[in-house]
Image (cartoon, rainbow, N blue to C red; front, side, top):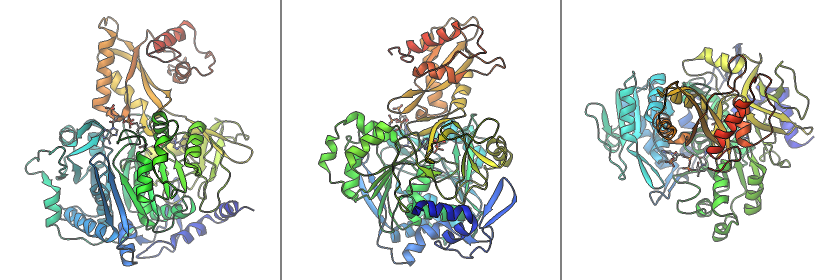
Length: 633
Ligand code: COA
Ligand code: AMP
């Protein structure tokens, strides 16, 4: 039996013993005697009687263990032309003080803290400071608009918000402070205080009686120590897109997160303590939580915090520069980043300027990795390119090539095999297992492993209903795919209204809500159409209200601006068109999949429910007008 199969089998035979053994690798105040509490499915709790602290495991443990002088974080920011290194000892000092700053503001165990910050060290310090005192952090990505921030403020009711005055996108400074003020105005819940990190590119105006300056407040704070927390104490809430405009508050608990993430660093990524690891993502996404902040720090690695883009900051050699300058051993990013580099530098000329021989592997996730991109990256870098599949909900890989156990053959288009912890099945609509090669719903047998999500914040019913009701006994991933005759998994598409734009997960339902609120729009649909750079881009189709004779261009411009203002620029909503009517099933469900196939010019069959086929000709004409379905924009 191969090494990988043997480890997978060990887990399958004795899952609880497997995770209890992995739990030996972390610091506990009180070691758990029980692996799993399973008396209330679908709510499972790992290591229920243990106590630990995520910040201790990320920072203190390394300082106490002799790694104090090692770089914990390298902040590399081409957009501000800064590069600084923070050792574990320095990180501890900053985190202790920021934790004390929060305590001083009345934050205690279980209180929520929203972090609305770009890729600056203080964002990581803020997360760790919350973990230190048992406050539950919720990081909100900077590319979201005020309204999205307001929704999150009302859902998790933070006591304090930690923010920066601005983020820096190539060519523009994004002022966070007005967005923050507008969000607090719009929300019903009001935080007691906001602490603002003033960045020189845009100084925010402080609201008297509520807002504080970060630097002086941190300087005046008394350092705070780690708090001993129950295993199942929530470490964080991270909101992610579902089918509606109300995002889902994915909860990660403390001990499961530490045990699983630490296990992945060696077994999946083959990282040893002291190695330099780089996840080129954003702290606002799950990749940032798991692989910029927690996992590399739990493992005693040096993590790169990169405030820049793969291209344009300043050129498509940016990633190679970072890899060679900091001697990165493994890089993790989304395929879209490589598509962007490939587009600007198809021959890889910029690569020739740098010595990237330190790089041993490239990991890709966040969206389906097209074989062309994988091949290009592999040809140019000469290292294994490993596609792995996971989600905000799981917090770490469902399928991967676990190179720390055994490097398996790479099959482009497949994230390889289920990782120990995940018993994956492909089910048809009746809940029966599909034979190999047949597409069905990708589901995972309960219980989910440690480090996944025990519930949704404040919405246990939604947790049970959204994820565990369609296929009893299984977690429904929301992805469809198949398993080939060698057991390799292929993840093909979402089964819901979630789309993936440049590796960012977005809800078409949320965009439809914005379009539908336009006074001239009677009915609408938003779908994800294929895009060679971003994977998918949202496209809106609108039926106008009877009697509306306003120019189409005006209405299109208005809805585009509304989506940008209400959801945010990250939605990348730039295409919409007016259609006379929308194709539907007899029960009134809009046939988005058919319209998507028309837009992408992939094969489709005339749905039996369509009485008048001319409706699809109308859709084709409209999509062609905006550059889809074979038309030119
Ligand atoms: N704060 C404010 N605005 C942001 C933002 C942030 N943190 N992140 C993105 N935006 C804005 C962008 O400026 C852009 O605005 P624009 O419409 O005015 O140009 C918009 O949101 C769309 O952003 P994005 O989809 O990222 O497009 P882009 O053209 O700026 O960059 C890529 C394209 C491919 C280079 C970029 O998406 C990328 O580097 N992706 C890599 C991987 C990644 O981070 N994946 C996340 C999960 S692993
Ligand atoms: P997020 O929760 O933002 O990480 O997005 C998760 C979704 O992104 C998954 O449900 C998939 O639809 C998609 N995804 C992530 N990684 C992959 C991958 N390696 N292959 C295919 N789809 C992926």
